[in-house]
Image (cartoon, rainbow, N blue to C red; front, side, top):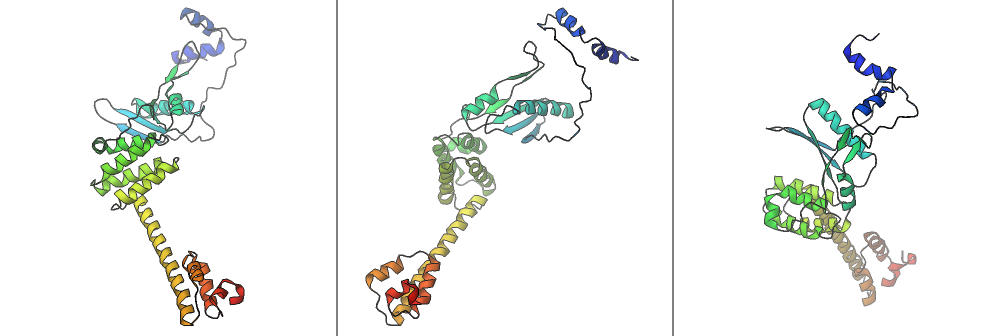
Length: 299
């Protein structure tokens, strides 16, 4: 039994689905009458939980508060527009604050795809229209002036990230490393790390950034800087170990009075394998000649 105006306003369409054709005619909509109509369940509850997680969500309060949802998009994905529309409608339902979607891309094709308005509804009447803002290589500036970079380090970092696949990124990175010189460590550290992470897909640019950090920004203690310094210390220890191995082999041979021809000496000093030098040292204790340390018989 219909017992409220609320029920009557929608239930009549369940009982008389063809009613929409008449409404469409009144509203001058180009609706084509269907061949059949099915009344579906009205329960939109998801039986199994579906994870819906926006990459970053910010709330800006002030004269005109907004919610900013930020999504990083590396490739075209036909399922994304539906997910983005869900995010925005859910956020508006939950917070009652106008939501805005910003999509960040690293290639022009993906950026242009993400920027296209997506209409949800029949072609002749879009119920919802998704209009993301997009930041990518097509509209983010190439910041190559250290003063400009220093004025907005975060924007300069985003410039490097969005242009990571562009050869011009080398100039941005050199500018950014120059701009970071003299900047407080607490400010520089996240810039260094975000830049390193954002260049992950461009090995050449990532290596350039590592070199710039190692040389221009060596006084910082960021994760990347420490990693580079650790690698340097490891290389130094390995070189010292090799040098000691070479000296030990020659010292044992010379102490035993065994002649070491120039070609044998060059082979020993040219070795950079600590394990091999250790084997030669073991053989040098009993080898009858310098040449014998290179063979198993020398043991």
